[in-house]
Structure formats: C-alpha cells, structure tokens
Length: 404
Ligand SMILES: *Cc1c(COP(=O)(O)O)cnc(C)c1O
Image 1 (cartoon, helix red, strand yellow):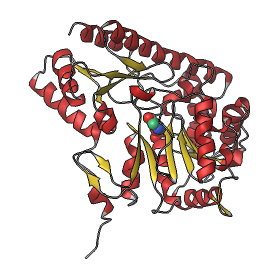
Image 2 (image 1 turned 60 degrees about the horizontal axis):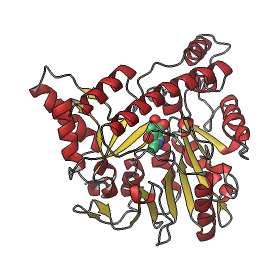
Image 3 (image 1 turned 90 degrees about the horizontal axis):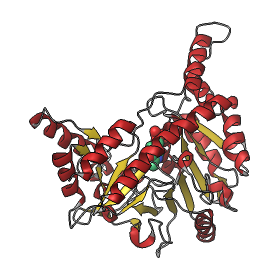
Image 4 (image 1 turned 180 degrees about the vertical axis):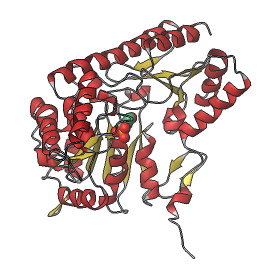
C-alpha cells in the first residue's frame, strides 16, 4: 500500500482565502440583494497594457509560421528577456547581476515554494509575522517546521519575527540564529517598507551568521520613497547571501498571464558548492520554461511604451491606496502601508479580533477584506485592504466604511 508524505497532514485547516470565499458566498446567498465590494485578495483588476497586448499578438503570429515557430523554451529563460531584466532591474539600479544569474519562471509563488528544495530540511527558517503564507506552508510540506501549536497558530521550529506598530512593521534581528531568512519588502500583507540602511543590516547579519536571505521583491514597482531599495542587490555583500524573487504579477498585471524570475548570484555558496548550479539543476529537471509568447510579453514591460503605460497602471492602484488610507484615517482608524505598496493595514477598532472585524465589515458594509490573523499571530487585531480594486469600488467601499 502506498504511503503519503506525512508532512502534508500537518498543514492546518483550510487555506485563508478559501475560508474567506466560503464566508462571502454564504453571506451573499442569504442576502442576494446586497452588493459586495471585494478588497480582500491581492489580485489586479486593470486590463493588460496595450504594449503587452501587441507583443503577445505578434508572438502568437510568429508561432503560426514555420520559420519563426518556437518549441521548448530554454530552461532558464530566453536571452532577450534575461538581458532586459539585467539591464533594467539591475544594471539600471547600480546592481551587479548578470543575465545568466536570472532564472525565468512562471511566477514568484512557485519559486518561493520551490527554492527551499535546494536547502537541507535541517535548516531553520525565520519569517516575518504576519507573513505571506506560502513561505511557511511550503516549509511545512518539506518537513522543516516541527510541530504545530493550534492555540498559538505557530510552528515549533520556525523563528517568528513580529512586525507590529511597536517596531513600525519592520522585523528585528532574531535572537536565535536562523539558516534561511524570508524577507518581503515592500511587504504583503502590512504594506510596510524598509530603507536601504535597514536592509543593509540584514545583509551584514546574514553574511556574519552564514544565513541565506530569500528576498521577495514582488512589490518593488510600488515604491515611491527614495531611500527604499528596489532590490536587495543594492546592498553591499548581498551577492554572497541573497536570493531575490521577482514577479510580473503586480507591476504589469500578469497574475493570469504568469511570469516571474529568481536571481541566484554565482557568489552565493555553501562551502564550495554553488547554489546557482543547484537551482539551475532543479529548474532544468522540473521545469520546461515559461512560454515564448509570455516571455515576449515580459520583454514589452521594459519597452519605453510598456514602462510608460505601467507607470500609469501602478499610479492608478496607488491612487486607490491613497483613497483608502486617507479615508480610513479621517474616519479615526489607525492605518499604515499604502505608500510603497498597494496594501493598507489597519488596526481593528475597539477590541475586535481580526475575524470579528471581517464579519462586521461584511455584514454592515458589504466590504470584504482580509483578517490580519490569517497571516500569523502578530496579525491579530489588524486587517488588510488592497488597492487593486477599481477606483469606483474603492471610493464606494470607503464611503460605506465611513458611515459605520
Ligand atoms: C503576489 C505576490 C507574489 C507574486 O506571485 P506570482 O506567483 O508571481 O503571481 C509573490 N510574493 C508575494 C508576497 C505576493 O504577494
């Protein structure tokens, strides 16, 4: 009789967003006349920019012609895209990253889950709390997290780094030494950012203790403040301790198109073993490359027209963020985020728990957000709203919340 991976049985309850969807569907069924505005899930709503659409069309037509048809893409990505990334995202920001250190993929969620495979299950992970749930759950699947405490909603072998208003939502260096440190800035869910000087402290720490930082920069396009780094490689020494995850989902609306990349510098080593070689091996063995058409669409993100159009798209969402931030603030809420990220993080009013406020907001205002406690114990008493809705819905939602 076959046996299953027992680590999968350790995963607690239902996935956060399934639980939210269940509650919203039940409410809508009981109240079919009520209009519901969804500012919960971190998914974009604006259509793809024209530069991307025309690039997609052209690439599809190439596939119809025997002379320009393409089969399997190179495992690690087409040169044209890797060069565009190296030039724009790295050289353009003063970072020393070569095109062959960039591994193109179908998105940062997969990469953030898969990258842990190249590390021993004995490694200890440190995560921010609250956290993007994928980091922890994929380590649970790998058997790296110990036992689950359902009352505290924590894992025995995970180092949690609380991010609350007490530390301005920036983690402090952990007391216990981790092997793998997950950092995501600008942050999902809190919307917070850290300065280059703050990130430099993490890089110096990781190099000192021999840890690796997995840096998720999925929201770098939303950065508006000058001292906030767009890449961890802006920090000196990051080439020997950091892996960076990037995505086209939030900067270019590719959530349904699927494209991302991971940077593993050749200087990142464990003894004399290159992590770059291990990840190349893993990628080549388990992945057959992002589609040609999609990589061409990704290339268009870096064209002059693409850049211009996407700047407007990001500005559209950040205007929503401002509407939410200012609206809630004037209604007396304690709010943060929304400046370098499309997420607003608010304190639940009174002594309401995150889920109590979720129900309150859904039932009284027909607005769906995400309970902070779903992202980790330090998220309790907080709530996330996203700026990814339409402007009209965002304005309407805030108007409803203000009348509560
Ligand atoms: C949205 C998001 C991503 C992007 O994931 P994709 O798989 O590329 O769509 C990565 N990290 C975080 C923290 C995110 O919120």
